[in-house]
Length: 109
Image 1 (tube, rainbow, N blue to C red):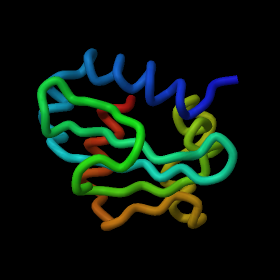
Image 2 (spheres, helix red, strand yellow):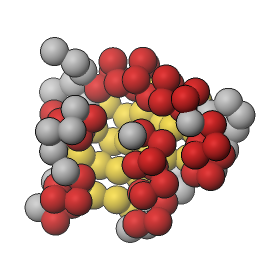
Image 3 (tube, rainbow, N blue to C red):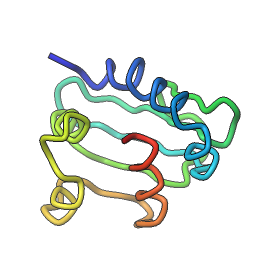
Image 4 (cartoon, rainbow, N blue to C red):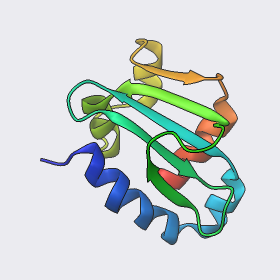
């Protein structure tokens, strides 16, 4: 079973390397606050080259996404729709920045 840690340590760094132009367009710091079992906080910093992923809250975020770890994994596996999770209150963005979220979605595929 894939865990959020696998996603942040392997899948996201690979996606960042595969999409340098999209990452440059993102140009933001995003905190992922994952709740529940296998949860934790991770940071995606696309303001540096190359973009970096780190465990913990690093830097001042332009966007913080709060979601249950299991739902985050489902999004990555394309078994859940982020827009539906937002409407259900299961995915929260602070501040609510749809444009930045859409750029993030392009990076994460």
